[in-house]
Each structure stands twice: as C-alpha cells, then as structure tokens.
Length: 245
Image (cartoon, rainbow, N blue to C red; front, top):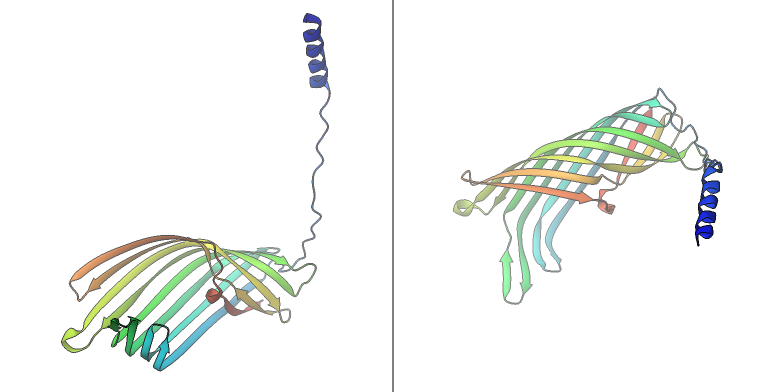
C-alpha cells in the first residue's frame, strides 16, 4: 500500500514539473472594412408624421367615433468620427401629439355603454441625448452596413387633457421628466460618398419617468415608473437622412 501511494506521489510530481503547453490565441479572422473613416462630421435628421380623421368610425367596441389626431416628431443629430468606425456626439428630439374626439361610444356589451365625447389632449416632449456609435460594414461592402448607438437620454414635457363641456368640463395638466439609457441599433445605406439613408428601430434599454399631474387646478398626483424594454417595436422604426462631411 505504501509503495502504491509513493508511486502516485512521484507521478504527480512529474506531471506538475512538466512545462505547460502554451495556449494558442484564437482568432476569428474577421475583416473590418474602414466604413466611416476618422475625421468625418456626421449630421442628419429624422422626421415622422402621422395624421388620421374619423367620421362615424366603428372598430370592435368603438362605435360612432368622430375626431382627428396627429403626431409629429423631428430629431436632428451631430456626431464626430474620432476613430475609424467610431463616432460620438449628440441629438435633440421634439415631439408633439394631439388627439381630439368629438363623439363616440365605447360599447362593451348590450347593457354596458360609455360615452366618450368631447375629449381633447395635446402634449409636447423634448429630449437631449449623448450618443456613441460603432459602425460595422456588411461583409466587405462600403455602401451597406449596420451601426449600434448607445444613448444617454434626458427629457421632459407637458400635456393637457380636457373632458366634457360647459359645467361638466374637467381638465388635467401634467409635467414629466424621464431618463433613458439604452441601445439604438440601425441599418445604413450610402447613396454616395457624402449622404446616406438610416433606418432606426428605437431605443432598447432602461427608462425612468416621473409625472406630476394637477386635475382641475386642485388635485395633485405623482406617478413614477421604471421600465426595461428589449423588444423591437415595429411602430418605433424611423427613417432618416445623414450627411458625412
């Protein structure tokens, strides 16, 4: 038994004394094309606008809906490429929405019916964001590529909601503040050496929002929300034009 244990000790000493084989460095052999060279200024703007009008419109549980809505958003940006395929800068966004419902009924069943006429809502929002971009070419192409944009966004806004008419008129005024940290991936296509079309799928990340509301200039309420979003919303896709100077 003692001889067996001694043999095991000798073998362990031999293995521990043997020089370790150097681990070879693993390389994926991915070629990085100089998609956006160092020293370029990148400026551009994305704009979205939607409008709808309803006249005695019916949709599922909504009947006799009449009114109009619109939404407008503009977002200019300015970035500087401090290294090949890397850029940093900022962007500003303004958004305005209005919803006006002159009349309509919310019908849940044959005995449950709610009138939703004389509703008016308008809101304005402002956002300032610092941005960092990493560009990746599509294969060896210098025309098509992707980018991943990291954003730190601060924003705020005001909104007003009115309901009813005459002596039954009620209104709520709200102010909000929000912080967002997230990713904004996108696709880019160069039309020529200086202009490109960009498609952005919106910000994916973490959001904190605080809203303070005052109803009929008397009742005050506060709402705080935290949200993590890593889902792609098809309604958040936006198109823009960028210039590389």
